[in-house]
Figure (cartoon, rainbow, N blue to C red):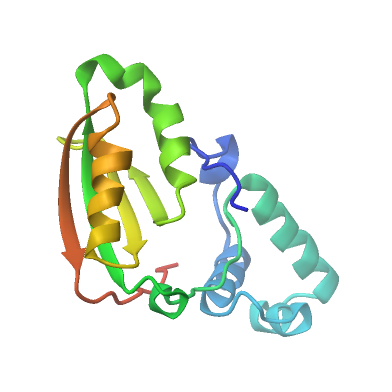
Length: 164
């Protein structure tokens, strides 16, 4: 079961990071399963200090979580799409609820709240073109808060490294 999507970042996520924090984050971004002793050695600090630093980064919201990057095709969802969604102007007060509702749908991989012409970009993985069509028609176009959608198919995806 997924946790509800957070709409706003924690308050102190923008507190300054020092060189040790950056070394820890770089190593964790490369391999979130790195053992604490190895992480401490890479950062040049004691293992106990490393545990405290990583805990503090999590509590501040700098580290938002750890996850496995699973190929949706391996789960029977080979068709990915990015769907731009624009809400009706009368639905602006429903933004947090809409985002949370969409994030809970099984096809949804990511939901991005945007500034600009579109309100959201929804990244989905579908089992077929029919599943994609039904997702858009039922969950988006069928929602009275939605004014417009635009679907773009994803041919390939390359995960970019985190620049720290």
